Picture 1 (cartoon, rainbow, N blue to C red):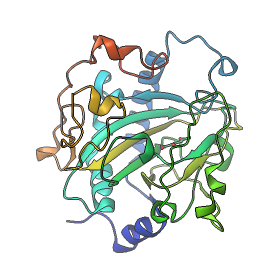
Picture 2 (picture 1 turned 60 degrees about the horizontal axis):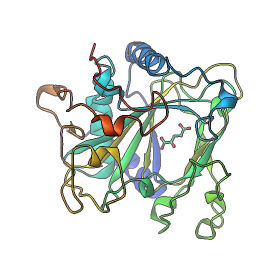
Picture 3 (picture 1 turned 45 degrees about the vertical axis):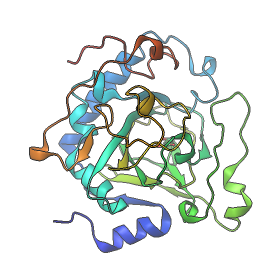
Amino acid sequence: MGLLSKDTIEAFQRDGYVVIDGLLTTDELDHFGNAVDMAVAKRAIDDGRSLQERSRYEQSFRQCINLWEDHAQVRPLTFHPRVAQAAAELLGADAVRLWHDQALYKEAHGRATDAHQDYPYWPIAETDTVTAWIPFDGSQLANGAMGYMPGSHVSGLVERVDIFGTEEPADLTSHPVLKGVKPVFVEVPSGSVAFHHGLTVHLAKENTTNETRRVHTIIYLRDGCTRGTSAFHISVDRPGIKVGDQIASDLTPIAWPRPGNDLPATPTPLPAMLANLAPPGVLPDMGFDVE
Ligand SMILES: O=C(O)CCC(=O)C(=O)O
């Protein structure tokens, strides 16, 4: 049986984003919020840098990828059946796989997130991807609310913006293809989940408050998607998926539907050669311990 209304699915197809209320209970937010807090703190333990000492990109948020791997308490959130079912229905997919999860903790006075599309960062041939953005305390304009450019996912724009470098990137919101479109900043109530398509141009405000904006995100792709290019990405290079092959491995398991809502097994550990690709804490630890 479907979870989402026709209106919700149509809004996503039209705008490239939608906020869905009531996907998580208050108990789940408390429980998973604590689990992700602990996981992020553990990943950050060896990073003594102040916000100012971090890179421009890192000043926007502390990013911890694939917490589901090394933190068993986070796994039921990353594979939350209702959130994953909603993602599948938005994509019109019979099944979705996980691309990866990531906590995006925008710390007090963290910088704005530069406008970008996600899909150009991923070597996936098909564009059927969607991100679930879960703020444990809801999100407000003051603490880093997301903004979306409505319809940008069907504008034909596919532009890789380098938001990782030292220079301020070109402002994608002013791209000629998007003339007349303005970002819509959205406050997400607690318990709701904001979804955006991989081609939707999005950005986030700075966090002007003294509290961290605590967000966990889950990126899904339609089951059956294939690797499009040889551009490096951990989600396909780690399991050795070749260009043209279906993206299917223990690192990108089916998120929905799962028989009996079981949880996927821990994937094959990260090879040592890939462990130091990212700043401290971004990727799962080598020889991690699942609690
Ligand atoms: O949370 C943010 O500030 C940015 C989120 C984002 O870019 C994403 O989830 O794709």
